[in-house]
Length: 178
Image 1 (cartoon, rainbow, N blue to C red):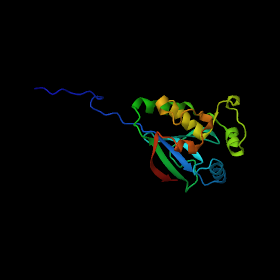
Image 2: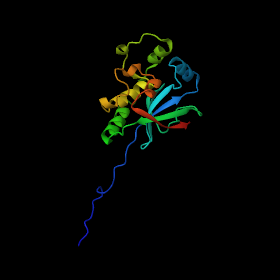
Image 3: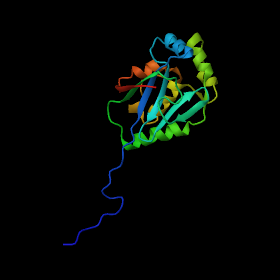
Image 4: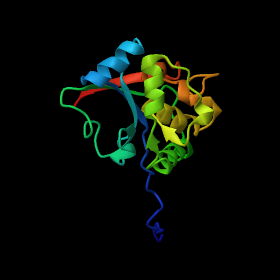
């Protein structure tokens, strides 16, 4: 009996694209101020796609892609990694990465951070397309669908890094020291 030959794509398993959220325990003065004001140990949030080596984060230069968890952070910064309790589908993972890549270059929203720290009234409708870190993570997660929204009845621009930590959809998977 002749053996059937498989084509190049048959029999290969698709490599999973994992999505993790990094919550940073910053050690710089501005990080400590954010932590104090938000009553949290976290000052920063980022979306980490380890299988492709892309960390998407809003920082002072805008929404950028780094190649590691520590590339844009001080040595000694602790990063807690979270992921969804319920596994993501390949389609959800692809949407998350496409959304992150689509936000590339958006300006950093210094006004929102000032509003957090000084407890100023903040009108998100008045802002031009600008992002801060946890807002960007929230948007990336929400793009995957309503069942992946980290917190119900919450606008992205109202989310601090600690709020992401409080999501009942996420679990801690490990920590990393930059």
